[in-house]
Length: 316
Image 1 (cartoon, rainbow, N blue to C red):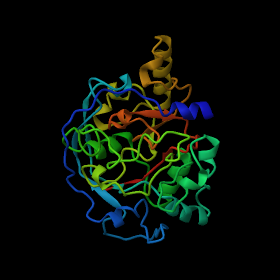
Image 2: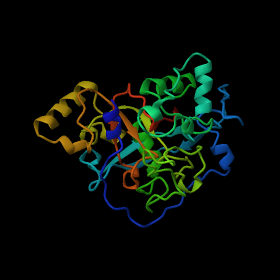
Image 3: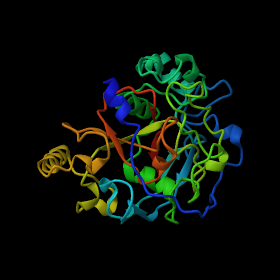
Image 4: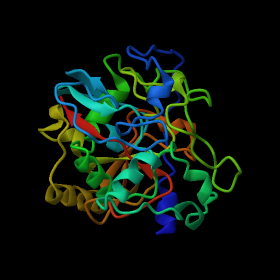
């Protein structure tokens, strides 16, 4: 498993352009952003009480609209072609779910404890360097993430929803625009084994906010998506609504790619032998070139990785 986990970290991409784009709804108060991922309070824990008829305080709205998903050139073949996707409005957590917020679910005997030895087990750093209350929770499986979101009356975002939140209406390459990643914008390129190999508290890089004010959409930790990974998702009849094939269709596509010898179709990760789940957004130890909004990564949902966390979405 350790070798498979390391494979998550590698992907190719094309050179970034040099035009920066503004956020249309940058968080007004970073202290509020830093506590999101659940209705959060000062110590990093969460208040999950219902607030009828009110906008969720821990989420930001992604408006309904049509956007460009994928790309025609660059990246991996599973990012092609660029196509128009139309989605209804939805809410998305302002930040990753934090250790403090996830702890509330564990203490309620709903969520399974995160793997707090994931860092040392994967030679990713010191375990204690990943466990502050306001850091992104990591070491959680797809099922763990799904359980938490559903307990909070939310759901894991779909792959199309996540890319919509990153790209907005202006087809930007990164969440913040078209300029390349920097340490001021996000957490990345902190290689395993170095003293800096860890995440930061959520919401502490506001220059990297997305077009609708969401923090850390690129970098920090990969984010589990609700969708199963479909290498042909962008070629299907349902692509205009961001809907991948079902597991049977996915397996047929994977076997076709294997028969054609297209091992690199999805990047350097091996072609799956099962229906895996999508992860998006890049991570703290990931190369800057791979933080593009179109990048797609896949792993079995049972994996609990030091570089993988999540945030939740909610229907508008």
